[in-house]
Amino acid sequence: MLTVIVETADAGDRLPALLAALTSAAVEGLVREVLISGGGPPELLAVLREETGAELADDLPSALQAARSERLLVLPATIRLRPGWLAALAQHLQRGGQDALILGEGGLLAGQTYGVLIARATAAGLTRPDLRRLRGALARGASRLK
Image 1 (tube, rainbow, N blue to C red):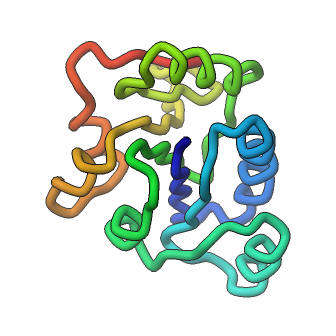
Image 2: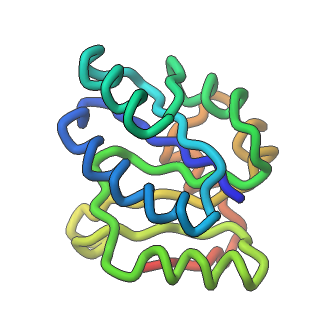
């Protein structure tokens, strides 16, 4: 099971849609917990926390420390997950679930958003972790899930 960490940055308005997409992953038994890092509108976060059971973390390092799973799925709130993303993730995890880049809609060259599937120990070992550094820490030849 995974811990999902959602980095909100300035995308609080997109957060409800992403959390709704993650609900199906929780129902399928792939997601253990969801942590929201980086803040956002307090009223919105309170409602989302109540409705989804997500926990709050001040920032990504705090979320990494609070995560209870050994595998992390770190996503920006701005990502638009592709149709079929859940099946691709489930298949990947069944094959061992090694490091992977999760591609959002839009195409990598078109400024596409992405997330990473990474080991908690690898992520926690980074100085000043952010999504770019997490991507750089992925194992060479990491899978790309669409």
